[in-house]
Image (cartoon, rainbow, N blue to C red; front, side, top):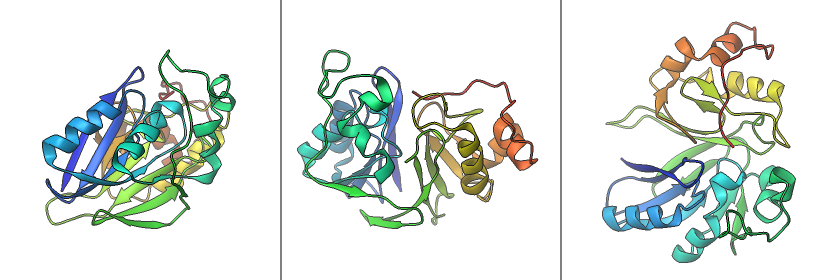
Length: 237
C-alpha cells in the first residue's frame, strides 16, 4: 500500500494520494488550496495514474484544486450532495461572491464530471476498497473514507475534518452543528478498532486508540457526556 500525503496551501490541508503500490492507479483525497503542484510531483515520483478525486467535504481548503487536478488527469470528482454547492457557490460557506478569486488566484467551480457520495457506499477505485460514512457536523455533507486492514497495514480512516489528533472540526461556520459532530464521532469513530490509523484533514496522523484515550471530545462522547462543554480548541477552516 502506498499513501503519499502532504500539507497544501494557506490552510495546511492534508492532501493524500492512495494506491495499492507505486506504479499503479491512485485516488486523490482532498486536493485543496495550491495542491495541484504537489499532486503532480507525487504522481511523477511514484509513477501513479490518478483515476478519481474524492472529497471529505466541500470547504475551499479541501476542494480548491479539484478543477485543475481533475482536468489535468481527466478524472471525476466525488463529493456528498449536501456539500456539492460549495464548489460553485462558496459564498454560503465563506461569505464570498461566486467567481470571486480567492487569495488572488482561484476561481471556484465544478469539474466536468461530478459524482455523488452516499452513506455506506463502497467505492472500488484504483484497486482500493473505500467505505463512505456520512459524518455531518463540520459541514452537512462531511464524510469519511475507511480502508480495511490489509496484509501489511492496519485499517485506515481518512477522517477529513471530523477527527484530528487531540481535537475535532470546528462547527461555527454555515452548515456546522456541534451536536451533529458529536453524534458523528460516536457513530463513525467509536466503533473502530484501536489500531485504526487516522489520517485527518489537518495535522499529524494518530490512531483511534490514542484518541479514545486522550481526545477530550471522543472521551466525552464515549462516556455519554458529549454536551458541548469540552474546552479544547477545535480545528479546520
